[in-house]
Length: 229
Image (cartoon, rainbow, N blue to C red; front, side):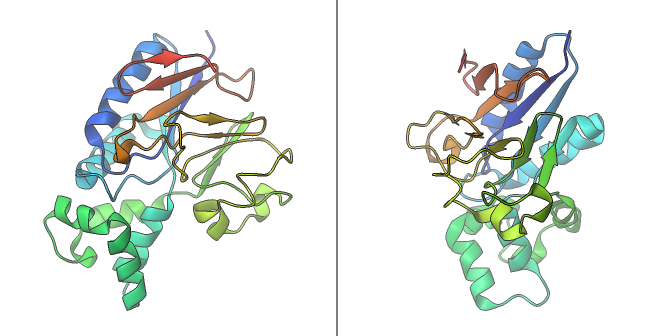
């Protein structure tokens, strides 16, 4: 049987939903080998950022390269807020975008007091991952520019002109960052948005891929519901 890849959208401190979604993905996986690619934003807004980071660090220790965690803009904001040379705007930008909930989950009052192992793990998170059919990033890419030439700012933050672009890309782009209005994944000809607003009351969603085709063959959410595109 062919190997699978499960891509998972923005978690934002929703650890129960993440664990439930992974159980549902395991049921779809059956006996097949599988890789899990998470597209970033593990922290902020939701109530259990520390638990999410703990859980993902443990999964990477146990499963190695089968669990790929990308950096999201919220992880980048945290790193900026915890940096030695941080500015007041760096700190306020993070706090105003859900950082206060993250501090609460760690029971500290300043991001510099987060565990060094957690900050160190976040610093190692890559901005992109590619397989034979797809490119996985947090926010998207700048249309018309090769993946190797993309700016970190765009990979972490871009919305437009990426979301409205109908240009083909070098590969199928899987991303999150912009919550869908429908609460369902947004599948287009050349990209897939998996941010279905888990921290805003929506479900956490995964897409299942094989190596045969770029688009997914199945969607799964943390309620255990599955449906075909």
